[in-house]
Length: 119
Image (cartoon, rainbow, N blue to C red):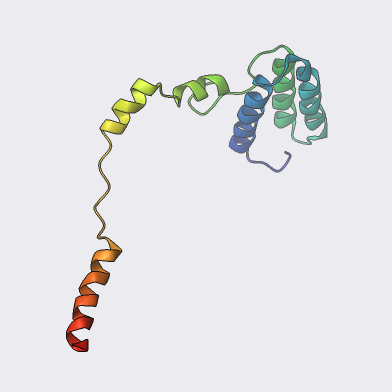
């Protein structure tokens, strides 16, 4: 973690938060400990403080990071989810793919040409 750019660290913390969020509450102390050890190993003061705050949040059962849009991992997942009805509407408005000629139609034309020469 020490060499990650700041935004990458935040993105990693959002992912970490999502994984902790779907895990059993009993893993929170170990997850917080992992972040605390990463904080202790960081030579960068700002990063050490950020990881310590994230560890405190994980231990407290709170989100430890937010996306660039300000959403928690759970909120971001919900924002990217569609119900079956919503998906039907989305699908109905998608453009149709362009038609591609059948490779078999082309073969039939070649076969007719070949037959002319073979007769």
